[in-house]
Amino acid sequence: MSTGQDSQSRIVLYVSATIALLFVAVSIIMPVQTDKAANTMLAFLTVNFGWLYLLSVFIFTVTVIGAALSRYGGIKLGKDDDKPEFTNFQWFTMLFGSGMGVGLLYWAVAEPMIHYMKPPIGEAQTAEAMFLAMRYIFNDFGIHVWIIYGVCGLALAYFQFRKGLPCLISSAFYPILGERIHGPIGKTIDILTVVTTIFGVATSLGLGANQIAGGLQYIWGIKSSPQIAAMAIGVITTVVTLATISGLHKAMQVVADTKVWLMSAFMLFTFLLGGAVFQLNIFTHTLGDYLQNFIGQSLWMGNLEWTQAWPVFYRAWYIAWAGFVGQFVARVSKGRTIREFVLAITLLPSGFCFIWLAIYGGAAFHLDSLSNGAIQAAVQADTATALFALLKHLPLYAITAPLAIVAIVTSLTAAVNSATYTLGMLTSGGDMEPSKKLRAFWGIAQGAVTIMLILVGGTSILKSMQTASIAGAFPFMLIMLVMCYCVVKAFSEEEV
Image (cartoon, rainbow, N blue to C red; front, top):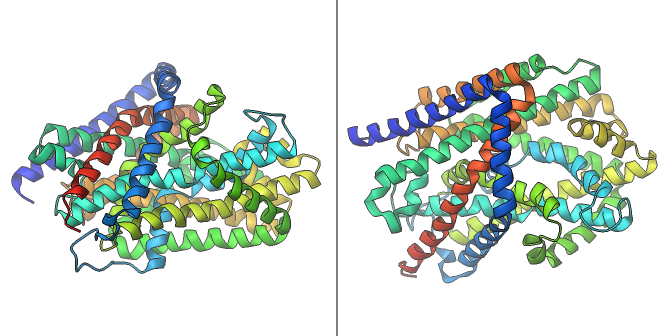
């Protein structure tokens, strides 16, 4: 890296770290005011621009699917003779591991029950409400998630590996900015990406640790507390830091593989013992309903309050993660064709999510009916323990409950692992192999900030940071719309 490039990368590192630390300091000093300001901003954006979040993701969908089906689908994300670095299975586990995991563990039981008890339309606690609840969660965790990640991943992989630009979010804007991607505009884009990544990872790590603490209390009666959550974060931070500095091929692959195999084993266990036929009926009906209503559900705003609280919130949350997840999936997809990348990123992880949701959502409804509403009661009491409440109604609870804790830990580790690696790239001028010192810094920094926040203010400060991250997704959504234009413009200049 040249001296000029090194200076520019240090600017991104120092400015983004300063912004994050200032927000953390203000959150600790003025927690109530920070929470109020963040919620006011989020409410303003979702109420006035909820339609734009939904419409933007629909535009992303058309762009990504259109690229795969067009004559440009055969273009390599790299030079024409580049070969993939990873096997298909390794590639899939890293695609899935970077962008999903703890959310499925947290919401697969709780969210369908919430919509079942309080649907946006129709009568609650009916068969129709159950099927609609499953379609809603398919919509929240399905293809749209991976389309959002795919837009960034496609643009970044194309401009980095085919056009030879730095591994930075700003590189995707070369068709309209040219060499100015190395100037203030490009650095602003990269800084925004780093800051939203720090906030998003910190909140996910903290809220995931709270689920671990809640699980420990539910299983063994160990009182849930900020100290227990902080200890969980400490363990995850240690694992992430050691794994990240050891290299992409080693520990990151082990973590991703462990997560996928463990979640697959959980699915099989719950499928076999949680009402398999009922789950298959749920899956078949919901998949057909989801596909049939894909466009309408993507843009549905029939109940504005519900839409802002669920689909818009989810779209904004995934957009907040899109910078780092997109960068990571781009990094591991070198040598794949555009069509291969799009089909993999949209269909494989979402297909896994659909199966998981149908199994756990179906098991939740099946066991709830057999236990006179016990799952509903558990969700109303504490959504963080919904998964454990379901496992308690299945055999081998003494084994599966602790394994659920392990699954949460591996899911968090996989996501934070990829984020740490990506933060290293973004703050080192796009170096595809950032220094171990820098990777260690980001691993420790993320954990330390989260521990400090959770010890000082508990989940309230973390939720303020989550809200701020989602609010920060609004300008990044606009950046992604421009990114779509840049991709289309660049493809039109390809000779195919």
